[in-house]
Structures are given as C-alpha cells and as structure tokens.
Length: 201
Ligand SMILES: CSC[C@@H](O)[C@@H](O)C(=O)COP(=O)(O)O
Ligand SMILES: [Zn+2]
Image 1: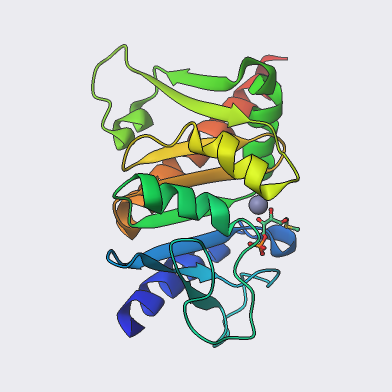
Image 2 (image 1 turned 90 degrees about the vertical axis):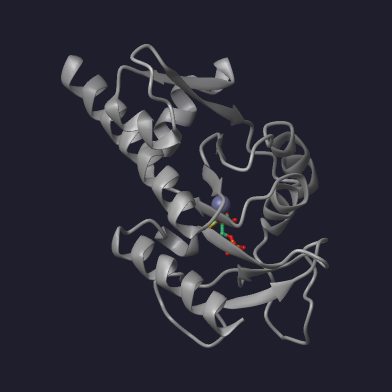
C-alpha cells in the first residue's frame, strides 16, 4: 500500500509540474487490490499541486472509504468506480486543461472527436497509416450518478479516454505508465488541434 501511495504521488507530482491541476481540478486513482476491489483515490477539493499526508484515501468497489478517515473521496470517484468494475485497468487520471475543454466544446455536438494522420496515435497502439483515434464526448451532467452512467457507456477496454464537455478528460490504462502515456498523447492531440485551428484562421 505504501508503494502504491508513492506511485500515485509520483504521477500526481508529474502532472502538477505540467500545471494540469488548476483551481483544485483533477483526480487520480490507482488500484490496490482486486478481490475485494480497492483503490487509492485523491481526496476531494484539495490543491493537487500540494503534497500532504492526506492526499489519497482507500475506497471500495462502491467508491466508499474502506478505512476510517476524515477526508472525502473525489467528487468524481464514481467514474473511477465504473472503470475498475468494468475493466482490468489499474490507473485512472482525470485533468482539466484549456485545450481539452476547447476540443470538447468544438466537437461536443458530434459526440466524439476523431484524430488521424498523427504519429502520436501510435501511443494507443494504432500503427496503420490511415488509423483513426476517437475520443467520445459526453455532456457535463452535474448529477454525478448521471454523469457516471453516461461515462460508463464508453468504458469498454482496459485502456481508454472520454472527454466531458467543457470539463476535462478521463483516461485509464493497465498501469500508471500506460495511463500517463495515453493522457499525454490526448493532451498533445488537443494542444495541436487548437493551435492548428488558430494558425489556419
Ligand atoms: C473546481 S474543480 C471541479 C471539480 O468539481 C471536479 O471536476 C474535479 O475535477 C475535482 O474534484 P475533486 O472532488 O477534488 O476530485
Ligand atoms: Zn473534474
């Protein structure tokens, strides 16, 4: 558990250096055990750029604290719950960035954004020259169980990404390395897309 804590703290530190946790946004989790399912998740409402002894707490398959604590699990823990219950993913990362928000707004009505002709989509295991990488976009329902239900419709594999319109992106993978790789690739694609549109205007 100490090792898992340190692993999650390290990726949190790294994403913080990228300035991906503005205004207390963002939440991260790491699976600790399978039977019963438990995972470490960030405590709600904290500045994720800061490091404290209460940054994470252990929760169960319903997203409820598995141990006595006075901190609350992330408000979006239910989304993490959907991923761990439906897949073999080991790590979930959620960040709000200006670029992922803009892309989600630009393509929100279409329900997905499609990227192609970009070397970086190989990060998702797409090696063909004409490969397309799709990120579904769901509405930003304020009612978290409703959001989690809409989100769950797009959780199929052990790795994936979903944009929440004008909110942020949630990415998951089999472990921290993979989840971070996918998140960085998604952010690369969003940043590239926004810059290209600006240049083309
Ligand atoms: C001001 S951040 C908005 C939050 O409601 C949420 O979207 C978020 O990402 C962080 O919530 P948290 O409960 O700290 O995990
Ligand atoms: Zn969020």
